[in-house]
Amino acid sequence: MKKQFLYVFLLFAFISCQEDVKFNNPSFQGQKDNVFWRAVDSKAILAQDGSLSIEGLTRNEKLTLKTTSTNKGNYFLGTYALNEATYVLTDASGTITFYAGLTTGEGQIVITEYDDVNKTVSGTFKFNAENMGNNPLAGPILNFQYGVFYKVPVGL
Image 1: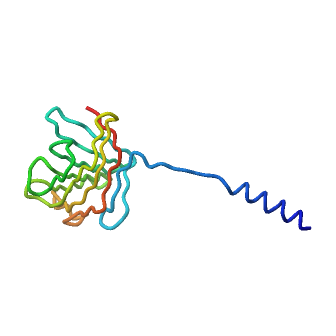
Image 2 (image 1 turned 45 degrees about the vertical axis):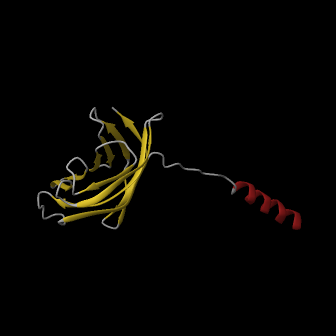
Image 3 (image 1 turned 30 degrees about the vertical axis):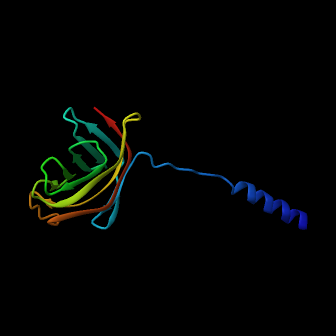
């Protein structure tokens, strides 16, 4: 009886020992109005003037972060026109747009790493964006916090 118990124990030990490693690379996620939000697809576009646009997409949402360059550092929203965050929700009732940029909203985009060799960008973001159409189906302010973009591929 002891041998049978030992064999069953060893069988379960070997069956349960598997490693399911899942990488979230690239990643674009954060908390939207205190609810976890994750982009299904993400990309970054480097413009000819050196500005960077980072996009995160879901089925019916698009979040775009724009900075004046790819340099590491802080890019503040609400004070400078070329740094901005735009969130667009499109559903059966129409389109709702939230914006944080020059004199509208507030926030910060931080680029922590720009890999020129592998063409990826990483960083963090947080912002409060205003409802641009005063759409009554959404609140007046959209809040993103604890935002992270990690190794998002950069194209031209």
